[in-house]
Length: 501
Image (cartoon, rainbow, N blue to C red; front, side, top):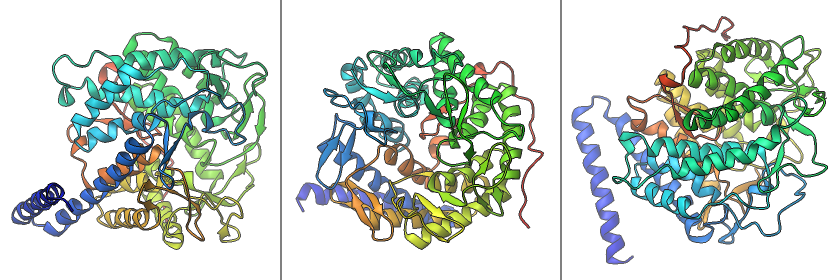
């Protein structure tokens, strides 16, 4: 180790020790405070191990390949299971950098945040011949830019005087305009795919998902409020309203449907992949924009979910037409649900499901993509774990609601598992098979935008003190502003809260 590195680490250890000593003298629960500081720094190191290796080996491409110290330009591959219509000359959009912006601020690194914003302002362009998934591009790129713009213009995160001139908002609006042709359908439901340069391609598939067409309102609504141009929010709201009108008499949704005819294709659905963020955005849109219609939709949907999908602490899938169970399986994306339940005050149900989900994590060391509840076994092909954040996210929300230190232990277990099973010299690698812990050469951008962020906030929520944010489904914080509310929301109660005896 060089003298420079030795001095750096000595200083870090000295500062942590000093902070621990100060807390032990002033806080009666000094053990808990020490635990939080130690874990905060552990998560900080995790984030920078992922971020620094991305910047070294992959930037300005989209995502890092940590096993080979290389990169992938993956924006056009997201949601593209068959890898169809891949662009020939696309060379990346610095996706992981965009996804990391708010995390950098939350970790207190304003200098790197400012440097990243400067690079994006000067180099990022969306005038590229690339077919992308509208939902994925919306939550990752548009959401990342809108969130970073709002944080950059917040007086508490102020840039060096005069250095920021709304460049990220200009980029976000350019991207939002490129989304609009996707909504030109008879139903108003958007195509799932859009070419950023040429719009909707000839013979484009008309199949989309419930989450894909119903989870656009936060990012596009925020874009309208920031620019004064109502067309983005109007397009997203029209799609959401149309989707809600297609629900069954049981207030259930399917998973996929046709954007031209409005006919359902897959009638079975649950709270996992293809539907999850639809429910999430109803609640968060109500909080962000104050429109009562969002809350009324969510209340009806939540009652239906708890009635037809829930079995004890678990959630299966069911046919939207009959409510009859179809697939008894746990999918990794379901782990977001307890966090959503915290937002609406159903803490008992949230805690019950979270504890069962964590038992699955403990059994395998990480969270498998799909677990068959009726057979108590892994799905034969979907055994992977791509560094997903949902369990950490729900753990953060439950700790915020209860302050039960057990959730800090859960977070420590998650962080330790990630370091043990997925950390490699070149970053953090996805797990291809949780039964063998064989790794895959991919560090997903959401590991920096969500997984590390929620773990960090679990142990240090100082960024949130005296501030009010909602987090998008990709973990990008959006400030809740009274000026964005048509009126102050009425006091709401969840009359169908679920209590487990």
